[in-house]
Length: 118
Ligand SMILES: N[C@@H](CCC(=O)N[C@@H](CS)C(=O)NCC(=O)O)C(=O)O
Image (tube, rainbow, N blue to C red; front, top):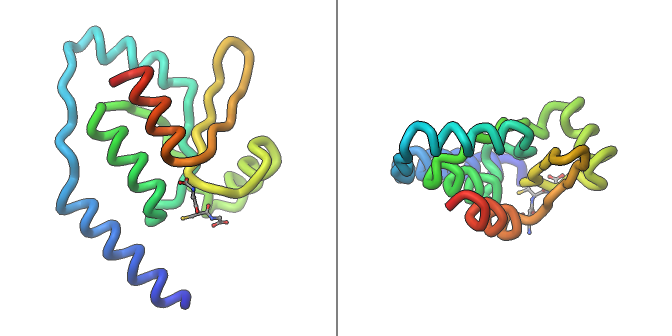
């Protein structure tokens, strides 16, 4: 089972690399404004998780730069579990106006990013 998942993960990463989406080009000042807003966001993820790949591809398509945190790392995983409530990736952490939101579900994350930045 582990081997099959490992192979599938590698295939997903290879296909993602080959068919990498084209990055959106924005005027520099517009991109800087978005970068400032996404500075307080982090995406908790696994490199080869298909749901995480889906979110990362959308981020690339929309040129959204968000810090990536690998939940395979024990300290990051326990941070996600303790503060977010569960170990499920992808999860978008949004810190804004003194409040922290932990957004689970790839579709919810993509919809949120597109609504805000697309
Ligand atoms: N419906 C969720 C599914 C996410 C999901 O199943 N993620 C898996 C990894 S691919 C997960 O976090 N599993 C828990 C674990 O690995 O501990 C989404 O679309 O984001």
